[in-house]
Image 1 (cartoon, one colour):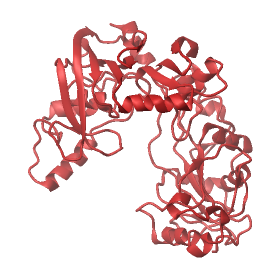
Image 2 (tube, one colour):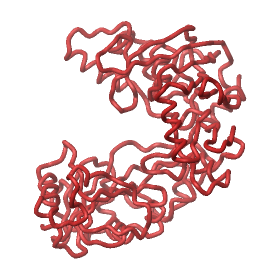
Image 3 (tube, rainbow, N blue to C red):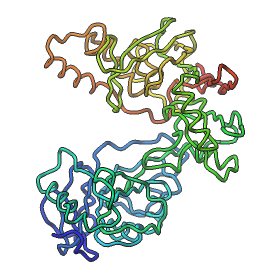
Length: 477
């Protein structure tokens, strides 16, 4: 099989050997749970790299949105029949990411439709959502790749093949492997171009339930301050930039130029976020964050009391959730500091409000009372407040990721290999303990947790903004 000599034919890399892509679509859509590259062949022409991820289905706990089954007319081996991305379903579909190498140049929409047997309007929606990427040269396969997969990768990236492509002249291979979003359905892709298609982008049904104008705290010449609702993304995800706070707030305010993200808070967190109106102010605000001129205060609803004062931990420098933290200093781990300014006893949220925000308690032993803490965030790490409070035995109410581990440590002190009562004695014991500890954590929350970015200020308080009352105060038992 030679890249570059193909017409419109395709070869898909799967581990099961060579089979015809002319077989019914149902025969290969069953591979949704596979995380490995596999190999197919059709007419010995072209190449397609297919990778279908294996993470579990996530459900958005919102009954007011259209069900997946209601937006489709049939189901084929776990995949629904594709139509359009809107209306937004109440459930996220099983993950599906396709990796392709273009065999013959042409419009990207047409190529994806033919390669993946998807309707044009659906592919157009994917492109609009920012779910399609390209690179001039196929990236390096993962470490789990088979010898056959590596052989095909080497074939399509051979110097003799790449030297004939004028589009990559003057670029290193690493530069040519950098991915960019496809932004237009008519965008031309040449033979040899790598495509990554997120067929099932992560969805955010709450975006369609919010009165976005009511969530705007302030509008200035260079920025907007938004009271972000829980269950939404600030600036979108890698496969969905449409259903985001930045997009919906821009439309609500009638802006022709979309707002830009200056900082993040978790999807399950609500509260103050600053969105820039210009690229220039986006850069300026990033500078203020780096110079520690931005102050953020949080309200956290915890399941147990938290001592007043500064809490210090160290976070493992691996960009994977859940974030593991240690009470002891570990070289290379990130410093995490927060200050608990207040902690007062409050009622546990009532069942109605818990259901509205999909709050899970994981059989926390006492739900008679909760504790509202005001927190000054001294360092800004991903999941920092959630991870630190859980490590203190006071997980945030509704935090389905960190609360299960906190409960497990309470029931069996020393289970955490980084806590006060750690039990391991050798490095091999430690590795096993870390693996077991990691498995104790749960999934990301469906909608909300008891965490709000209640205040944000910068330039020594010259700019100061507060969020509305947090969701849990509207339904105290």
